[in-house]
Length: 277
Image (tube, rainbow, N blue to C red; front, side, top):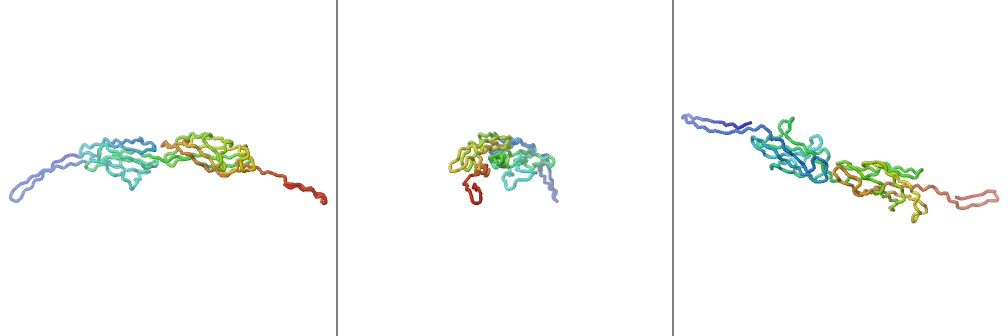
């Protein structure tokens, strides 16, 4: 690396001499490592991320531009993206708007005018920065429905799920759960909740304490059960919260068989007493 002067002298057969000087510049040194910051500091966010690249310099050929690649997993470059285009400004910015996976990162390095960039593969002159964007709301799902007909109870697991960043916290309580049977709100059904942090078991009981429902001959809640979980009870790591989630639980029937007397008859000839139920 350095600046070299080359003197070229030529002489013809008549002893005429011509001399010319040339300057050659050789630069084999990579630019200084860039300073890269992001609006999310590498954490999960539900907003667009702006990355700022600055601070690189080169004492020989001079700074040329920043180069960046968006990768995921084991250095797998995300193809078909404009993110590997050079940025000539110093400082320079890039904005990311699309959702990413947890292992997505941006690698940034500077190039000088001699096209030195990463240096040796064992000493890459670049910066790695996590790009984690999650704009999808988490949801509650129902699992492991169990109908205990002997004790007229139903249990179901309520599990918080999130496709990208994962669940951060939950604030589920029984007053944020509404039970419907055949589309009708069933306030008299008792709700018991056990669990924390996005994993709960809900127990429903007291199916037979309702006054006789309109159009039915029995005194109970029996039919297709649906649960509505209030919004804002589940938060992911990117601070997205759930909307109202409606969960179909299935059919529940705790009505016990009813033996009804219909008639009786005495057969005096055969000395028989007949009862019909």
